[in-house]
Length: 166
Image 1: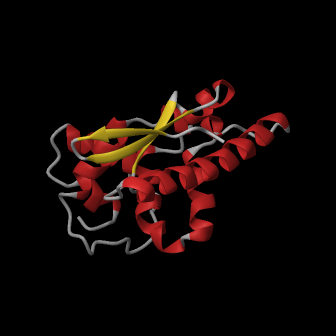
Image 2: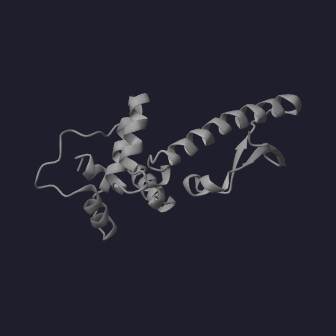
């Protein structure tokens, strides 16, 4: 079980766990840091131990997947991971599918903060209740092309164009 290291920061208590060497590429970091919220004392230590126990099981599962030739998490594509997630939470589908159409189906390792920021920026410029009215017709441009046109100075918001609201 990963040993928790409790950290005191101005914003509260945090716990840090080291990631095993063979899993660092899949996790994408040398350690994992989580907030313990407003917990103090024994309650914080208990929560850190619980998180460590869960993390140990996840690490064991990841090691088994790597041994049996299952694709590593870092080689999975965004579309695959969204499909798996939507099986358990179908209500999140609308925005995840918009995000997938916006950035394209790329490996998770290539997904960057710039992709998320660009998507969030365009989502702010359109009404919250905007939604797709019908499927793409052959004469319409893809979402990525709409975004490029918007960056070149088009007056139409790319999300609105994507949602056929223009």
